[in-house]
Image (tube, rainbow, N blue to C red; front, side, top):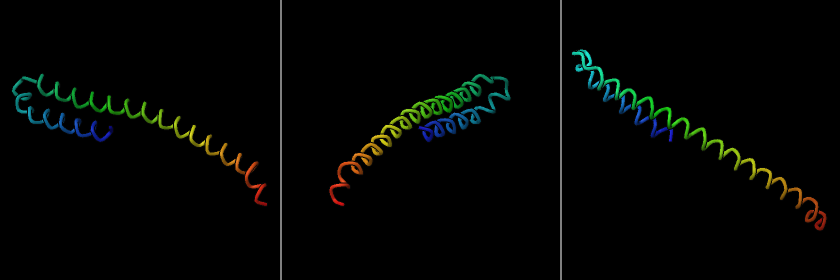
Length: 83
């Protein structure tokens, strides 16, 4: 997701710079519109990344807790039978 946001940001900046000659002539709206798209795409990609990382962090925490529980169960009930 950050890669897609970066690509759209670069595309938006490129489009804005391609309209620089029109901005110098006095029509700045095309340039600012493309810059708005560039910065908005960056912002949206970062927000989506933060939300996804929160979910991945919670999933990793649950998996780690489950692994600890399995290890404790094995130590308590299985290892004692082999020793």
